[in-house]
Image (cartoon, rainbow, N blue to C red; front, top):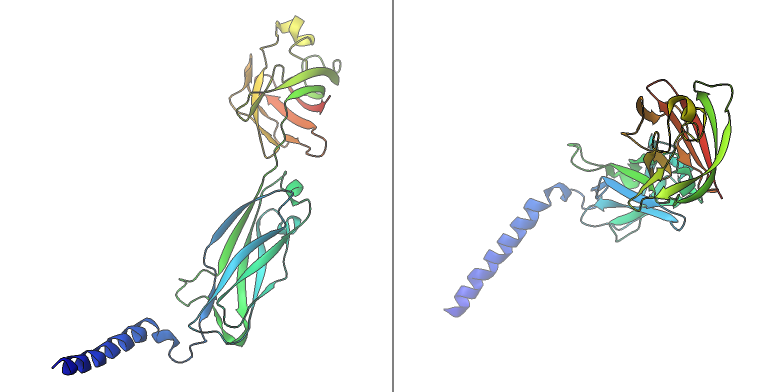
Length: 281
């Protein structure tokens, strides 16, 4: 009786096993090496610094077996900034026999962290074609064939310390005198990612002609600003007559090679504006 039960169970197991494989892998029945190429993820965000040499993005061949090399071609398409400022790429990647994955290795251009000071860089890696007639993605769009890479700067300088600041004024009430003006001032590190300058006007409001004419002083145009990836930003700052904002189209950044800070400011009340260049002492 026990032998009869065992013989009955064995065919049942075989039937159940075959049925599961058949349902799951029906799309590979004609050719188990057909499959398709896709990215396992849609996005990568990487901080670029002076020690980073390679950015690696996985790409998969989805198929039950792979007995020969698969050559996959791709293109790089700019989304924000110029990818060529940060990476180099061959345009092809090989998925070796008996494997189902490879990595697209993007070589980081030496000094790419410097290029990212003026603008972060975003680009798409777009799969184009594969050898052996293997398809890219699926017809229903469910497979990822575009991978977006976001490169962000990872190099922000500490600006705290004494500086010689020279300001060239675009407008104030006493032009052409008091232009340009140079003095020594301190950029104070607030310790929370922000910095403080007592007189953002470069001396016009504190010790310059506005002091006597309009009774301005050390706190008439003091500003807290942030340094994000060597880009100078601020908001909610003012002089006695209105808001003071970054000058439209002006330079507000740090030169990471020299530490020189350039700040372009504009006061909305009466139009005072200038470009102040802070050189560390």
